[in-house]
Length: 147
Length: 145
Image (cartoon, rainbow over all chains, first blue to last red; front, top):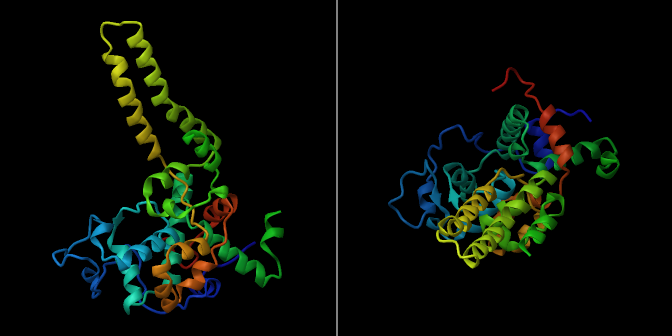
């Protein structure tokens, strides 16, 4: 299977519109009031991560979902600035998710090719979604593809 | 018991991912390491505390004058166990439906944001396919960023 993964393709495959701010982890988080998500108003920096317990309870479950599906990591005890930016999309600061995931896929692929280690491999579920979408457009299915 | 459970769950494709794994970091890291070699390593490492406690008991029973070495063995082995539990992991996303059922509070927010449809599309994975995809994924628009 050969396919060109673009923002439009990801948008169709995931069912998420390609609207909102085009942002990825290496860009600054500007004009987003992420400090409102913490219980304490004294928190003004999250560069080195903060404990999840310092977030308001409303965000705990959403953060866990973001970590499992979007950023795909295991550091469930800490919250970083990029998590907060993703969470802010729930309260009126939309993010272009196809763009974010495309950049994340590229970053993962680049690291995996360099390290050849399974620890640098993630987005397993997203890869399956992409392939299933492509196979459906070719009137094929996942099971026959795997065989 | 713990070792048997680990061996059963060491293959991520059969990983059950119940709610308490999602909430707490340690068991997740512990059982998401994949591969036979790593399983074998963990089998050895996890039996070290038991072995060292037995050797300590034998040392004491035989009446060695200095039992400091035997007494510190469990500490060292527990430390090694902790370090190996933090070994590289295969990061696997759980099944979407299970997750949404586990997080009732988040469901409304996800539906309002439109993410619930996306998350419900997560239906398993194939490690080999993911590896091949990552190996062949290239940035076509201009040079690598």
